[in-house]
Image (cartoon, rainbow, N blue to C red; front, side):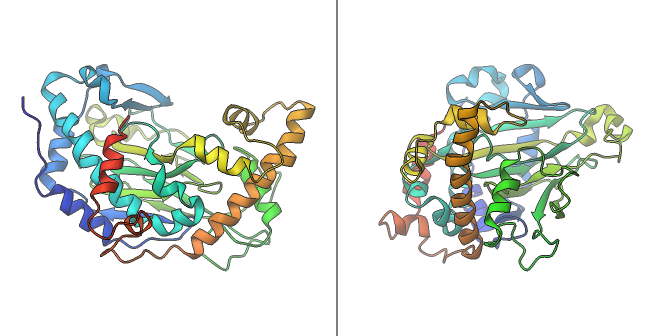
Length: 363
């Protein structure tokens, strides 16, 4: 079967993303409706893989399938050509449009790494829930992947009437007040670093000064939600009931109305130059494996681990929080006529090179 082309969809998604303002509640983020045509949304759902094509459990009730470029054979033959073309032609266009829209705050955070080393960290990922899905607790990605630039979630199922969207959590000031919409205030940097570093204890009642305002980006088919990853990019999916149990409605009609289908991508700056750059600013290098080990929830630390966490990782978190604070202040998007991404690369026309960079780095 010949590869499928997506005539008009590239321009449509680019226009929709470019026309959506950056929002700053909690962290810089985008909410873009009607990214694709209704026909393409129908095709995506019609070609959606079955569980037997490689889905694995990510959290209880939620399953994922990574679409690797070299592993299309796991997708059944009637769907394979569609997803190959989508993954290698249309999705890089969408990703590049998002990266352009986030370029101003992201450049503040990552500097030249953002335009030299941007790529997908994981391949395009299918997400789907089953009737037992009971939400996802508040979390960030920074505690295990501080080099991630942004996360993309495309809600895609028009038959879903039950699923909840993604909650964003704005950390209030230490006294419980707020002056800006951003979690990245420039005051109380030591306290903010302590909050950010206390992995999965962000809501611990032992710390009453950790208070939040919450907002939900509702689940709606053909809605793209993107947020700038970072140390306080706290997000969650709230459960249906106060006791954390799923609603019985999820099982109705075979679970058809609660599948919570999402296309997800995590976009990174490459970890090697990221860690090398920041290690030069610190008394000793940050090593990715050690970082993840020391930042995991309730990590058991040796004396040297505790020293490294305090003398190396804490200054790293403080510096990153300062950078994200500047990014929140600089979040206003640049002109779309000559995008910031291309200007940083010395280009003054088109966006082809950005798209090419992402397309050639599809995992």
